[in-house]
Length: 455
Image 1: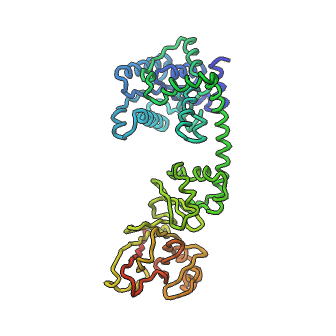
Image 2: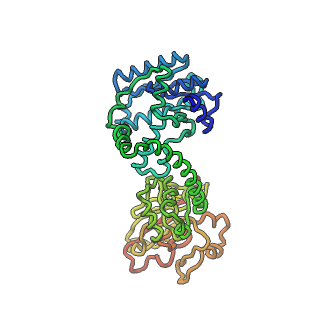
Image 3: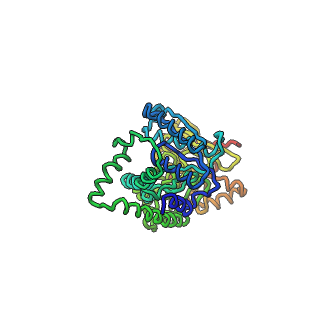
């Protein structure tokens, strides 16, 4: 079967696009992208060309740009060219040249797919990644430890980006180019082993093939297997997430006892927390958190996983809308929102008790520093909560406490508590807990002031 027919079959089998779609082909001028253009032409697809000039190879970069412009004339189709100051971008954003080129390239491609470029807006972008690229990507991902999603390599379709040559080996593209008398340009940087992909291509794979001559064929077969395995894996993880996670506003609550019975535990934990900025290296810490005391937490850049009684709570680091807020030692002010119509705050001050009068306002709590251990947890009250109201030696459930105060249903819903190691130290703006009050032996106190403001 000809490469052209296999190309069409691959597109149809994977539902990549249909014959009426407008296509944008990413063309460097190298043999892979030139073959992609010729295949699109032979199949009668409606396509235009996009070319990036990264100005990294001096006159060679300008030569490539002119070649692509001439290619557009040959096919009588439009050519879009974008020139980038790649080295300047890399320095400004503190990334490698490779990362900079990738970010600039796909940033521009996304613009072309969503905004008016002067040419018909394309439905899809086609890139010329082939089977050899996919094998190299899979090996790089394996060595980097990216997990099952990395082992399936490059997917043929991701949003509006399509790779319709993943079925073909490099040597097949070269044969097709020679048979069709196609011209192309060579990128001299492809010969350098300073880039990790080139090193794997030129050094690692040839060495492996000396021991296992069929290595590339076997790896290509494994890519398909891993792709199907990932589908099963994704389905299983989705079921675990559905059973374990309860979303409450912008927080995610996970029952500790149920999580501890889950297998494989570490894999499920990682799949849950990775979307919140946590890394695989933190999974063991999260497992340890299951046995820790209330108030312990593990941070990522954007979230915290907080142990709160029989729950793990994944909460944003800073947000007034959170239903659970961690308060660390040294915190001065914390904002929270009891409802959508109110923004409230707690202000923390350390004072010498002998120099002050005991507060009479319910909006101020004065607690003995020696009895308080951070972190504290600020949260909404819930059924089953209890405390020892100031002046009482017996515990009382908050539900009964609110009934005695004759609070309305709305006021109950807006009630929050301050908790320390599973003990409520203050029902905010109502009453502190007897166990944490200042006494005649108290030298220093924590003064916590509540302030509520309508939005």
